Length: 361
Ligand SMILES: Cc1cc2nc3c(=O)[nH]c(=O)nc-3n(C[C@H](O)[C@H](O)[C@H](O)COP(=O)(O)O)c2cc1C
Image 1 (cartoon, helix red, strand yellow):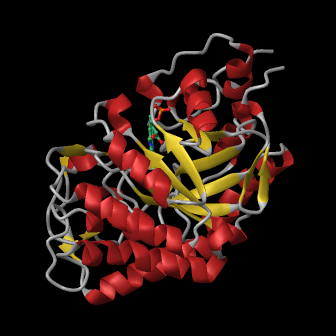
Image 2 (tube, rainbow, N blue to C red; image 1 turned 135 degrees about the vertical axis):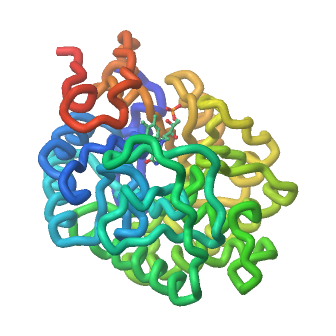
């Protein structure tokens, strides 16, 4: 048995985790019928329940937020019932699980949305390039409608209701997805948020939608079940760098700390080709955020242990290794070889490349 901190029990708010290892949120596009998760997701997550904490794939709080094909939702009765299969099975296996709530905003095609839904964003700007749709293959992004103040109010309600539904579905909490260029980050960046009302312009204004969502979710389900993910310097989905970026995130994290959310999940996507997050900003965020800080992005056993030991991370999240290694925790602990992931089946429907990766016996 290893004596590393990584494999020792941890505490998150008022729940116990069996280790310091988090499975990072990963979109897998297997919710083939009306964005409803089912048995196949329950099997996938249960196979990976030796993680101390699982964070699910991005899950939409609204028909307007389902930007990609076959991503699950948490806004219908069927979706809530569907997710119960996962939470029940993961809990029976001794795991803990948060739902990641992701509204895709402008990263969308109308062809991917249910009938009657609309593509919304803080401003009417689209990311360059195409997006995959089941109905028409690769398509240009649909130009979003600039959200009215009613749309903004409604979106805050949707995030809040989705959080209530997540708890009803048996999740231990929710992670609000404010990373990777989706709706919440679209409000943070001055490139995607060109509004002239109280939600745009200054750092305070650009942070106000995110903070309003967080406050509303906290009121509904409590600080111990509310968390967030941020990706400063991320360039996914057409996001760009801007001069006041460090200052923006320092302000945001300071405010999030005041609100007392249970964890902040930081991701550095330089392992996936994004610019590296400057050390200074990373350290600043660690100083500003007093509750549990999860770090993610290109970690292995050694680097994770180092960051846990130094206090830079309270928990460490791993993404890609969990796709191809259901028993990633045991393999890491034993120093066993890892299965390589098959990129071709990351986002395809069905069991292949999803629940058929083998564990060591
Ligand atoms: C197939 C795939 C899907 C992903 N989907 C999401 C997602 O839904 N939400 C999210 O916040 N990050 C998503 N990510 C990013 C991962 O959570 C993680 O930050 C990234 O893989 C870096 O960690 P790693 O180097 O350990 O893989 C995804 C990554 C991959 C490979």
